[in-house]
Length: 88
Image: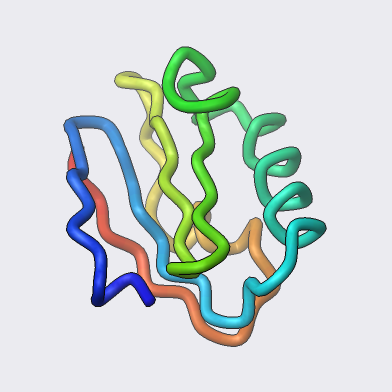
């Protein structure tokens, strides 16, 4: 789980704990979905998104100019429980 990992959240990044994300299809869908948004910095990670299925979290690179609020970022996912951590 994410509690067992030490994750560095750099400036203009967000980390979301996504409980219920257990398969590669989930991870692929999340990566594809976020990479198509207008607030992701595609120069970070793989098209702006890093997914860890085992620890059930997603790390996003956010554009410096983004004004997205946390509620809008989390609405892109359809999982039971999402916890968002931002460093902006």
